[in-house]
Amino acid sequence: MAARRVLKAVLVDLNGTLHVEDSAVPGAQEALKRQLRGAPVTIRFVTNTTKECKRDLLERLTKLGFDIAENEIFTSLTAARNLLEQKQVRPLLLVDDKALSDFTGIATDDPNAVVVGLAPEHFHYEMMNRAFRLILNGAPLIAIHKARYFKKKDGMALGPGPFVTGLEYATDTKATVVGKPEKTFFLEALRGIGCAPEEAIMIGDDCRDDVGGAQNAGMRGILVRTGKYRPADEDKINPSPYLTCENFPEAVEHILQHLL
Image 1 (cartoon, rainbow, N blue to C red):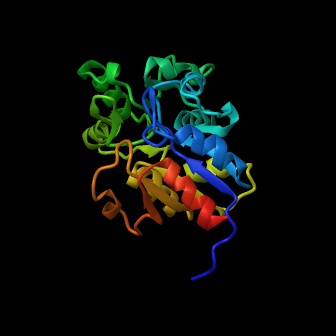
Image 2: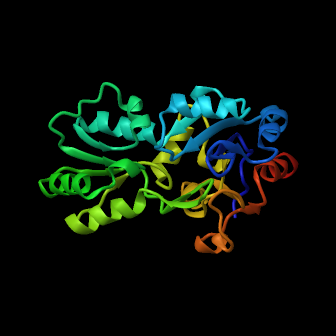
């Protein structure tokens, strides 16, 4: 096996890894600010969240005590907007109202595409049927991501994946997925850093979307046992995670001790 290159970048998931909604993972702020920030690596925060725009997400993280700049955050909403601009389509946006500002300037009148994110308020029969009819008439189906579930303070909750899959099944089509675990998402997150996938590592709580996706893109992946992690998750992907840690601070400690 070829020797690994020197580590240049650390990609970090947000919800479930650094925080769960409005509660930080214990010790995560200090591990980021006092330890990882002092290492000779570029840090990017990559997230599939579609519940809020990047501005609101940054405000939430700042209130929790995280030292993060807006230009360090790469979201699946950003990736989705980029794709809409490339395709020059008018989307029916099934996203949370708090996320709509990330699509400011995108025409949505007389839609000819369907975009699905996490949108509990819109996942009702009338709206799903509207999306169904558009897709039947040739509109492309774009999934911001297809996560099965995510962690809330009161327990696990359905992600957009089951609703995207339902539309795929009903219309006999396949969605274009832009967020994790797509290889293009991870490569886009690295763009501008001057870093090859082999020089990056991903830390996340989702074995498939965070770790599996990163490793399929050529990175290493560290799975943390916080957030949506469930026992034996590490056995659900092949190859297995590079490493499984109890939490983000432990993952940072491993990077500092063994990879730099």
